[in-house]
Image (cartoon, rainbow, N blue to C red; front, side, top):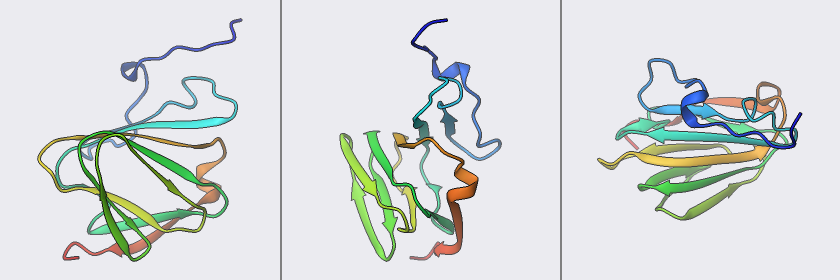
Length: 131
């Protein structure tokens, strides 16, 4: 047994199915004991706009934009961030992301490891398509 784990993105399943882009939850593949780590790629016009948002009851999340420009809806505020930007979202804050640019957005999402279904709440109609 070793005290480290190495995985490439290709070794981790994309959980989005038919939805455009990729979302690879690296935590299990890395045998992480404490940190949840997700890699996400969003093509143009993908994310939560025109759909739901979500919030967590107890855990914070940190989103780090590797490349591209990404819109965040955080409660009632919409902000746009670019490469090299980290966004911390506290528990209880409803959030969603949207890529309105032609280039793909690459980002990493980090939080504490836990059961995301137990801590996650989906908010229907959070970010209307015409907003």
